[in-house]
Length: 334
Image (cartoon, rainbow, N blue to C red; front, side, top):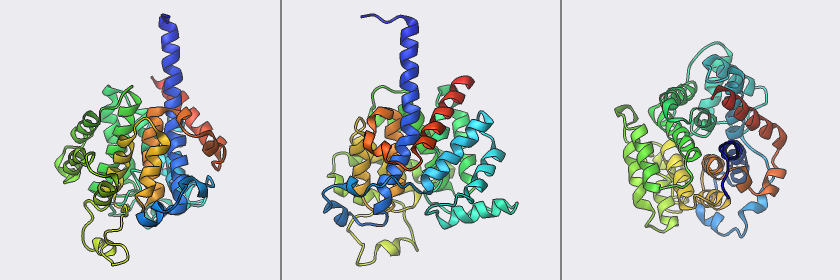
């Protein structure tokens, strides 16, 4: 059966809307799936027969700040720094759920009228950037995606690793949104090329090396990737006898992004399998699952997320409505 041009266009729009919804809701569900296990080590998570059993649909600051960026894009019909600051300050009144010290301090400074971001390489900007990847996903918009992803990052985290992580996740979302099939090497090469600048130091090199991990046992790969780039004095925390060698994913941006991408690329067509895999990696489970869920949802669409998880997600109607509004504004601008 041949489809008319109008039918094909209509079908493409339905798929695109599903991918927008899948990204935002997939991130929130991932966040809520990982939330009960934050700080757990891999051995304890491996012993659990059903990771989903503790799911209560309770999200964290990962989802709150993702929605803040989405709402700023909606109101501004595109990126507007002052609007984003407004929504970040508004977040303080929600109140923040499980927020990192650096991000919280930076936003409190904003509320006092002072722009004083933290010098943190933490994953707090990569976890929230997916709406920018959705909104600026076209080839000709990639310079804007890079500009705005970085601007959104340095508002709270003035650190090269945080910026590199935000750019990588936003570009990954834009990539999967525009591809029917995922080629591991091509996606990784695309991301490396996007951030291959001196200011991002070793991030592109580690990203390129991600290709070497798919022939390893998953457990070993996540153990190694989970501490990639973590330096003194923070590495001492992970060298403690109770933690060393057991498997954990650090909250530093580099390992968070590497592990989230790795889990997605292991099972690119299976939302729940990808998200569960990165949660079992341990550590900062809400954030790794939120990032992995955003990328997988943007690729597989809203229908790929188990219905029972969406039904039990806190504020599901608000999150769905925000994603839908973001899509509508995007279509008006394109």
